[in-house]
Amino acid sequence: APWWLVENYMYKRLLEELEHCGPAASYDPFEPVKLEALGQAEESLQASLAPLIDFVATASVEEALDAALLRSLWGNQADLSLSAGEVSSVKGGQLENLVSDRRSCAVELLKDAKDVILVLDNHGLEVLCDLVLVDAILRRNAGATVTLHVKDAPVFVSDVTEKDVPEVLSWLQPRLPELAERLQQNQAEGRLKVKSHSFYTGGRAFWELPKELQEDYAEAVVVLKGDANYRRLLGDLHWPYSTDFDDFARSWWKRA
Image (cartoon, rainbow, N blue to C red; front, top):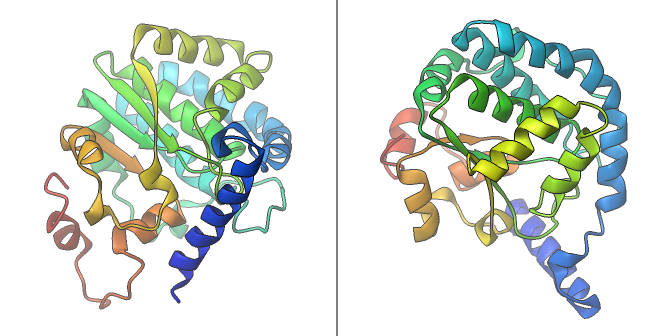
């Protein structure tokens, strides 16, 4: 059987077992390792994210979004499902390690976007990097609203659920209080929202996106990250090396 299908099936069976202890989403068996990942991220938070937050405030809009987007990208290295749950510190990658670099196009979309959807992936350092990106978008694009799309249940060890978001903001409060307070204020004002959906804990491809998510995506700039979302984009299939990704995506994602 395909790895992607079996991996999703394994976590579904785990959630079924958890239901014997109450609603599966109310108990996260991966919470201890997620908290450990946050602790391991504290050094990076102060060493690289805090200076980045200051840079975002003073740089041009394009430079600010570019820097925040790049840091968010490299945060994906902190994927605990790929390290068998082992937590370690993560260093950012270099530009030459990017297979395809179209950040300038992404920045142009983000700086004028009205609606941005960020499909969150991992807890720990990555979600901190993602929240810095969210903060940069909301600070430098006054007309933007950002919605965080998260898993509806704990899967893949480190994936972010709806329950995790306020807990991460609370963890941030004594460490980077200004960032935590801005994000909480944006939540209160409706500029920052959180939405969970079962699609993100299943094995379906993006061309099978449920109608309600199709409607969300229709007018939004969507930021996708991580191995699982890449597999969903490609249906976890082998494609000819000559396949043009833009043409492929536009064949089913009409605004791509």
